[in-house]
Length: 500
Image 1 (spheres, helix red, strand yellow):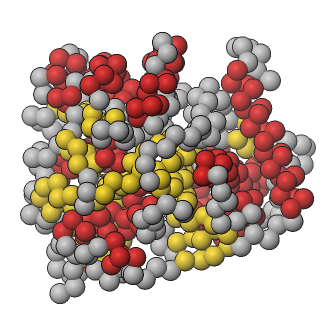
Image 2: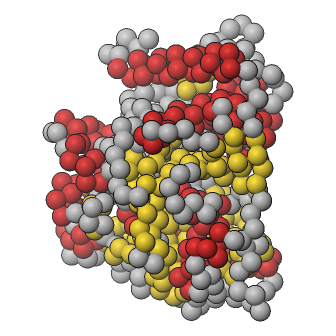
Image 3: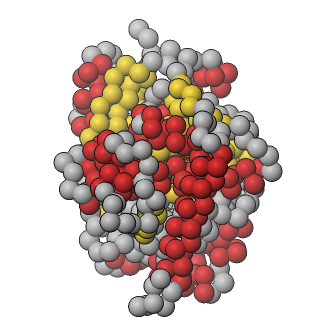
């Protein structure tokens, strides 16, 4: 029987299960939507139990569709930075899953900056001080939980990112672990030592006893316990943050290429041979496998697909994201409208958590379709900003952008992206590249695939989009975008009641 790997890709808005054969074919897929709550302005959270339930349901449907023998391994990719705390004895969460999008810890982060800790944090972790990182969320969860710090220090409460939470449940509470990619997004991992940093733990007030053990992305973390339709005894061979798994799924194993993952937010990442620091970009572990740890530069954008979803919600469309994208295609331009989707601040390369969204350039002739197109174009403009920062850091021109994620099916967006970048965009023919990467990492750990060369040789389908926009129009559009961003940043620095 052909061997296969079940990949679980637990994302912000949905959970996907993808069964991948040893020949690289996708045998079956299934997905489940996961709800998001906004209890206060700037607060974003999810129910950790619902996340776990979505994994069980998506996996059950995927395996039923495939109708074949049990897979040989499981690999997990996950939304990053979101934090969960749970009681080790009962296995029940003690609070919400605080989303990576959440800004509730902005005051705590501002205090860290005021007290002069940012330079040290950047030097050790590669991450600027920002509420997106997991550490401040973990601090909030302990403060939120009665007697949380004492219980965590005594080992009664476990803290983790979403990969750790899923691993705990898959193994029936046997394994509490995290891979280096997810750990590198917490702001608690020392990139030079690849271990939890005692001084940073003290700074954030997080007991190490509550944190997961660390290991490589490709590693057998344990075996499945009784998990509904998921067979017991399956090796769990990979944990990886979704952006890192996508990098791996593009077969980017050496420096020289940039990939962009289009989701609720977006991540651009490129491999570096050693930790490398660049203004406006994060330094991270790209992936780790068989003793080989690759580092990377990354630019995180908070709202890309989420901006299109927001416009659809705002307009009251029945299927917000899909209908907004269709509406955008009904007009040839935005009629001068720009949307800067700084709903929870601006990420890379600006890193301003006080910025807020703006919709500018409105006239009496502005229509809903113009606003929808502005949201779609904002995805490409934000990607372009980060891509240019990566070229500056690399001190060389990068000839193309590798793209993945659901939005790559939007041919208008992919062509506009190529036009604004003035670079070829190579879109994966498989929207589930994060899941593919997780499957590959798990398959390497369990012998389904033998080497990186084996993976490089697997067939992959792509679609190429070459730039065709006139240079004068490109510069006019980019100039308008930069003016719009300046407005969002200016509003962030204005005194209350004096926003411009």
